[in-house]
Amino acid sequence: MKWLISKTFRFEAGHRVWKQNLTHGRGAELTLGKEVPVNKCINLHGHSYVLEVVLGSNTLSEQEMVMDFYHVKNALKDLIETIDHSFIIDKKDPMYGELKEVAEKYGAMKLFPVDFCPTAEALAKFFYDFLTEKLSEVGLLGEVRVVKVVLWETATSKAEYCGECS
Image (tube, rainbow, N blue to C red; front, side):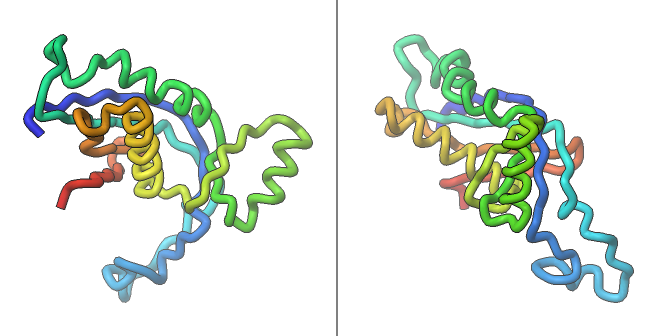
């Protein structure tokens, strides 16, 4: 891509990584012989997320832009407002049914159900796919592409999803 633009969004949300097991899986061998901490992320917790979307194009519009930042903001505005101050939960999470009941009974928990374990990596892909679909719906996908999505969970931890990078 000759030109790249990026737009940053912020939102607050809770989640839990119900599949976390620090004693097994990729990377567990890096801690062999060391005391493994408790699986903290399996607990309900939250983050001040920072989402960056990067769009690119090999051509500029008649206004000499990849796309106006206003339009990028509007493409994601409703989703960001919906996910903000929600609890992101996998529908396959064993706690989902009970948390859904609590949310419905007390109305004090806004759930954002998804079909994946809401890790930073999976959420980055979720936003990538969402924005790609938005561009496709309005016929812009050939001219403008989502280059990557970066999702910061904390000031020191982020995940990136790049559909066309190698």
